[in-house]
Length: 462
Image 1 (cartoon, rainbow, N blue to C red):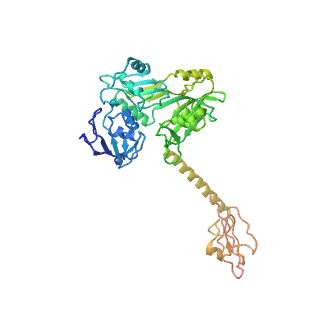
Image 2 (spheres, one colour):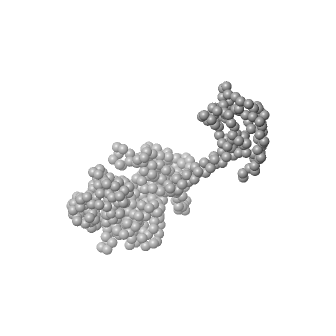
Image 3 (cartoon, one colour):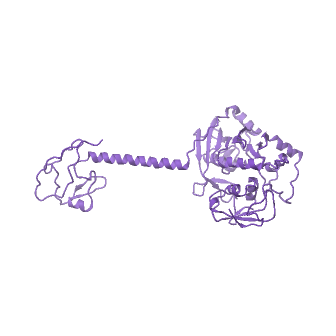
């Protein structure tokens, strides 16, 4: 990392929470070529929390070569990053001063969401309708409620991943900067396992499948909507799903495992295969809503999270369903106890292994073809050293033959018949089992050639 402009005098690094009013600019080095923007911050400015980086991106303060950038933007060597002042503790939206104290109702809401808590992490059960982070017009969000868990030693907790506003379920919060970096690494390395439950319209024909459809931001939506994009601009996205149960042909209860972390990935993928999530009008339109008394809210719930703990243990937490989801399950005849299936590791094949397998398969097929050619040559009639090959060009003219695609040699118009070794003129020499051809046919002689002694047969090669 190199600093293009730095008013802090610290070679691009600054204390967490410090706001000296100076906008910083950094030039991307070779070591950071191709990495995501949020990964760049983890490497070079670890004191800036993920929540802060996300807020900068949403509000347009984070720029790459003067253009707005998102947290998943991949940067290239030589590009200039514009980083606003501030650290991991974001100032209040207007004044830059201390945060407004939480009300008793807000503190009660924050505490009611807690599933597990220790000195490194807090696991919450986020209710539907509550945004994970703030933005334009969003004043009530999980990030704003984290002051309820702030301590003198630990400081203010910080987010390490997100859930959509209308998605409920398990949300992990780090209590220290060290645990935040540890958890962020787990999510980035795809070692954290997330299980979602969803109700979808219709019933997928394949009961246990893998959806692999690249995604990109839909133009004209301000980055608020995603779409399937199989062009080079699309980002790889994989989702595994399993049908747990079904209610006739109208609705299915599915388990979803995101194997990548794209925005709205589960929602776009299920809609793309013709089974949008119930209540997801954004991607499913009117088809996403069921008739009758089924709630029109989103039926997508982060059911379970399994991730390593900084102290070596394993966090494995299950979140109860929200009220509307549980009511829909009951109306459709689904039983919650049937849904917690064993958590299996996804059988993914790395890209390099796929290429190696393809190369091996090609080589194997090529060897089969070569063996077939050798067998054909061994069974071919006498004709010379180049067994199984038809003379072409000048040589073909000399012996009075021409080649025809898909067939053997044919007599050239006006040419004299070629003499065969150890055969009467006009007669066809019988092939001997395992015998090699006696030699190459030569140009037709003007006088009949004396017959030669037949070649001594050799043992065929195994």
